[in-house]
Image 1 (cartoon, rainbow, N blue to C red):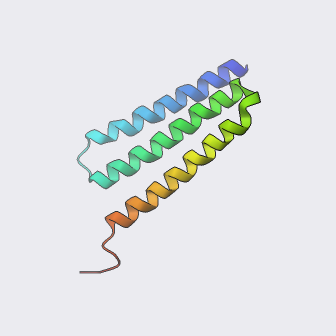
Image 2: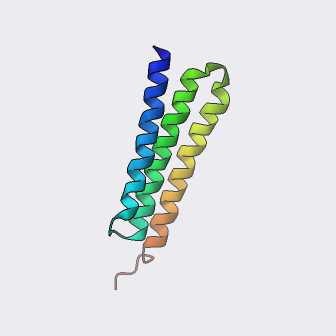
Amino acid sequence: MINVLTYTCIFIGIIFWFWGTSFLLGKRSVLFKLHTLSVSDTLGSIGIVFGLLLQRPREWPLLILGIICLAMWNTMLGYVLAYCSSNGGKDD
């Protein structure tokens, strides 16, 4: 049962990776593409690491640290992208 759940999490993570990459071909802005890619890549990576956590429960401190770092990195990248895309509060 654990193997099925592990492979399901890893498969869902890979689906998120490809889903985010597919938006790079669209005609939206570069910042929208980067935001979509960073969110889907982070969710995919967290899904894969969670699948590894189910497979290797003895390594839980390191894998939980990896999940926390991925989530924090995505949040910081989202703030940086939002700041770069704003006009600094000026309404022209």
